[in-house]
Image (cartoon, rainbow, N blue to C red):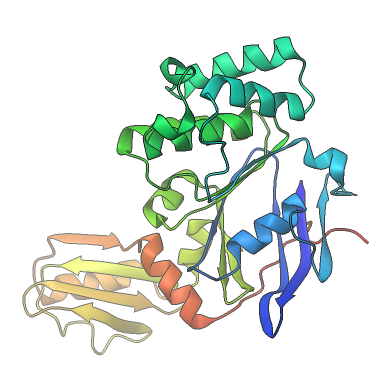
Length: 308
């Protein structure tokens, strides 16, 4: 397990991170989301050892991250970190060798990943001659070529077309299914919602919450969409709060704990024909907004905080 425990970082007078704590478990894809400047890249750079935390610690399998452990991490930075005038295949083999692979192992791995990521026909081209999307594929190949034990990816889907997004999503899911912890940051919340097992939301350098999309939805309790009777039928129902409604046939209500949704259905039927009655599941974009506005909740789970 990759444990990020209580890390803090200050740049001059600005507190970039404050007691950030979460864990990425073996075999899971973890989405790390937040607005620009929230602290995502700073956190990832501390995990990689590019930056040093002022406080806290990062551990992998219970051990502090050192230079040897960093060689076993696959990292994809947000900024393209490739040598623009170096040929793709030559560069990927070189980077794989830096992570300890033999020449033969590096060649075999580069062939596999360039084929898997759809850039095998460009291995003889200079990186600068590739489209931005293909450069992104090559960067992922660089992160994967040494068969990493952990994947840390900063905005890996930036600039990709839908086909490339599908390819990269499949690769990340396969790596997680093989037991590799995968953490990636993204502003594409619809993609995060589809791909990730758990999500961590950071705002102004603090972890706001960590959990599955289902757990984030549970913060708001049960919310129902009812189509059919004109709005007003739920106004007097105990434990039922009106969330939204229109002038025609739609009412959205939130139920207090212990309220039976079947009682709500019966009340709606008494007011008129019900054409649709369903639980409303807000998209991650709306959950993200609500969670950030609400502020931090208890974010750590058992095992999230590294042992001393």
